[in-house]
Image 1 (cartoon, rainbow, N blue to C red):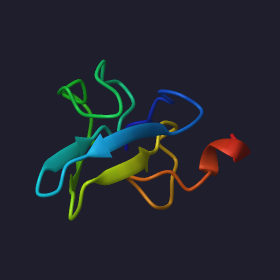
Image 2: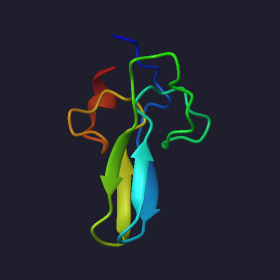
Image 3: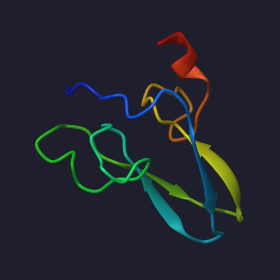
Image 4: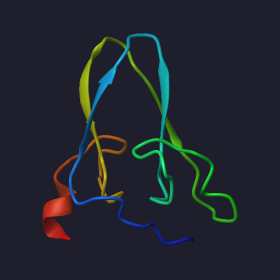
Length: 79
């Protein structure tokens, strides 16, 4: 399995829109964090889709170690 890269040690606050799909970068290599830009090519890591049920602010994991992916669960505090 490919190793993830920590994009940042904290969450990304994102205002999501109801009905939209978001593809969270699982590998940490994307230049468009916290979302995928295809930089995972050549790894076994793929983006994780989140479908926004309602418009709200969500906190996407930046360290890529969350047990509640794609959302932050505070795992960055243990890195």
